[in-house]
Amino acid sequence: MSQSDDAPSRREFLGLAACAMAGVGVLAAAAPFVMASGPGQMDDTASVVDVDLGDMLPGTQKIVSWQGKPVIIRHRTAEDMASARGDDAAQGLIDRARDADRVRGSVIDGQAAPQWLVLVGVCAHLGCMPGPARDSQNTGGWVCPCHGSRFDSSGRVRSGPAARNMAVPPYRFVTPTRIRIGEEA
Ligand code: FES
Image 1 (tube, rainbow, N blue to C red):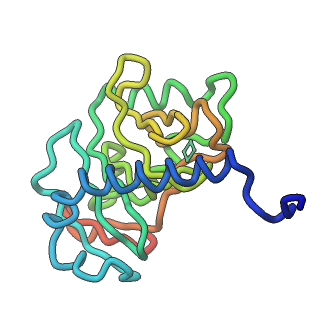
Image 2: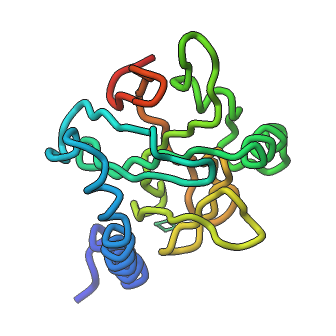
């Protein structure tokens, strides 16, 4: 009997299984961050989530759950931001976007605060959650554990099978150290 056209191929099935296993590992690693993110995270399907950023040093990130999806909040270093802006015009960007357009919600008291990057932490390939890249190729970025898509310090995909950048959710600053995910700036 031939396999249905709608059935996932063996390769796709193995990819999804790897994605699920990697997701379990990443979420397990992220659990302390989720638990530490405040009362807004008690309902992980909430349409609006407030997140305290007051304890985040440059170079750190926090992961919270919003509408059932992981959201990565990164406090970028000056190096991360310079790298992201410098790559706005890079050749071969898979899903071209300017860094400044990806931090539109980061406005505190009328001033741009591009050190704050907020991303839906879901890879556009098969939905795994990228983790921080820990090698010299991609400082300040992320790598997907499933099939190796790499994302830069603006969350833009730079290589691998993902065809789109990590999405930026609606969010705004409600105080200089607190964001509300789910509301536009
Ligand atoms: Fe395949 Fe991310 S899910 S590269």
